[in-house]
Amino acid sequence: MQSPETPDQFEDKLRVLVWNEGVHEASNQPASMAEDYPAGIHGAVADFLAGFFPGSEVSTAVLADPGHGLDEERLAATDVLLWWGHKAHDEVSNEVVERVHRHVLGGMGLIVLHSGHFSKIFTKLMGTTCSLQWRNDGERELVWTVKPSHPIADGVPNPLHLERSEMYGELFDVPEPDDLVFISNFEGGEVFRSGLTFTRGHGRIFYFSPGDQDYPIYHHPGIQRVIANAVRWAAQPERERAQPEVGNPMRRWT
Image (cartoon, rainbow, N blue to C red; front, side):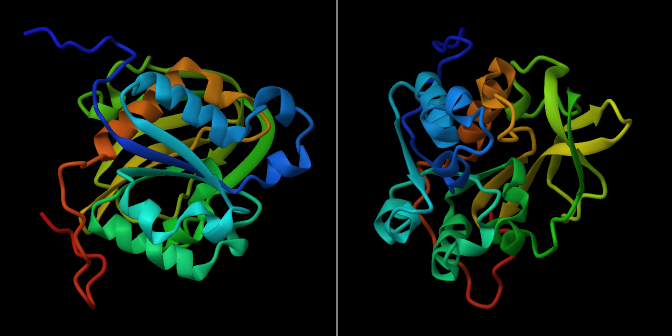
């Protein structure tokens, strides 16, 4: 039976929240930010997700919002949270991190983008430094699908070609992922595990590295497809938000 979906549109009714610290946008650094992302990185991501999920609620929040825009009521009403951070990881309230952590363990999906690997929430969920090698010389990046059977890889060109990108390289200090979906290679010869999935509690987590603020990467159709697929995969709208088991926050529940 043929699916009613078009290749670039899903019928899922989801509640999606795109979070961005918003520091680069506030300072217009880099100078290309206003041209590349006039509504901010969060606005650009929310805009294309609304196109993929026309029946869904897609909203945004930034660091400067009261409670970072991540209060209890809003998280409880979120199926998937996307997180982009870079310069202000330390400015994120520990109280908010604990709140997001609890909701992820309870079943909220989390998509961590680019330099969000150093965010408080991602390092807390991983239990490692999440450090890596990097160099920002605007090199070509090829993103290769290494698990084409995974839902996040559905319809994604292989490889994805990014003309200019920030190099991220190994060793990426994260635990063994559930699935390695994408790897990237760069002109300098480095390779990087650029798309990984994890499970923490009831929550599904996807980390995806392309997306530096210096380049209009989130306008790339293939990148948009990866992120939309990830949102769909991470969402569990039918699951009642569970509370984590006291004293065992890393347990994988079924």
